[in-house]
Image (tube, rainbow, N blue to C red; front, side, top):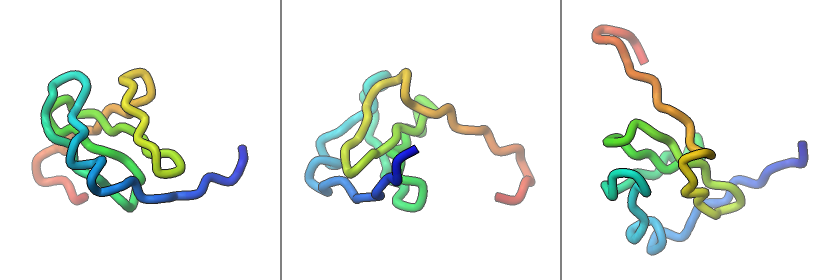
Length: 70
């Protein structure tokens, strides 16, 4: 696999993006390089500063059990 540069997406672009399933706002997780849709429980990858807004590319978020550390 080629080395992947982690670039941050443009903040103005992030303000315009919404989840393609729920149309809910997204939050950016800079550490993981993902846009998070809490409502859809999906994490969309950001590659080279470009958000990949395809459901087929999204990662399902894990539900945290009550009382679990994390």
